[in-house]
Image (tube, rainbow, N blue to C red):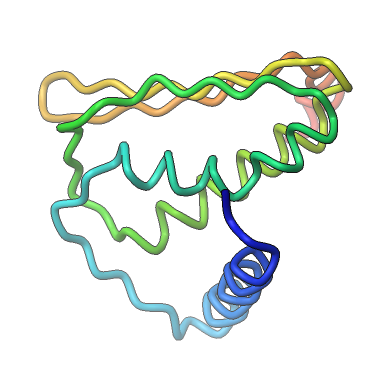
Amino acid sequence: MAQPADSAFNLLNDLLDWSRSLNKNISYEPEAVEIAPLIHKATCMFESLALEKQISLSVEAHTPLVALADANHISTILRNLISNAIKFTPQGGSISIEASGANGKVNVSITDSGVGISPEKIKKY
């Protein structure tokens, strides 16, 4: 389980990346990346928060799942999606993270038992 200092450090890095992206100073360095370890690391960061809300977190991601990607960007995206899933999932709910690969592609899905976005709001986006 990640320590609060690790979470704060990662949040700070995310904010710096976001700031750089606004200024077009963010680098993109794609390489062959194992996706499953990134998912497990991101999930570990939020285990205590999920436990506090009595949310079950399940991960189905096995190696080798290799993608050509920037590991820092993927980690940031995973942390944001998992954080939002926990934020909008009611107490006692569940979150499922699944990763699979086929035809040289990796698919990652994060599903939660939250209420979701109403059809009216989806139309606005």
